[in-house]
Image (cartoon, rainbow, N blue to C red):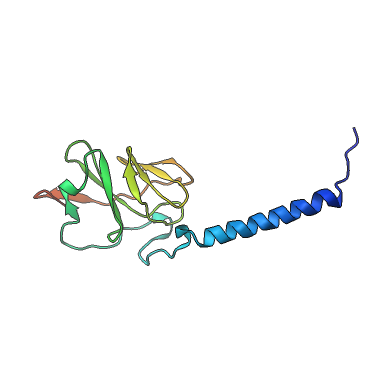
Length: 149
């Protein structure tokens, strides 16, 4: 069977649709919160220590729900808790492109920018484009409060 040569009737509308789609995509992306500037403490790809370093408590233990967690955006840390009093700390900076993670739900730490999710117990990536685990942040519990270790 002979291959037909595309005509202008086919090619021109295809180009118009492509250019219009690119323009619409740019307009939507540029107004998205994913395009917002990252805080100066956000490390590209989540490498390095989490920002901060205060001596006071990060949160009260009761502020971290069992089998859940909290994102401390100002400190750049996400804290997760097992069903007891076991607390894990991770950098809140997604290892995909440096966005801050936004929530902990159903055993996963979630990044809103590109859909990456990480295991709340280990920080290992479980979904999305991230391929590297969230760096751990050493934390300890004293007097029912969570501190950097």
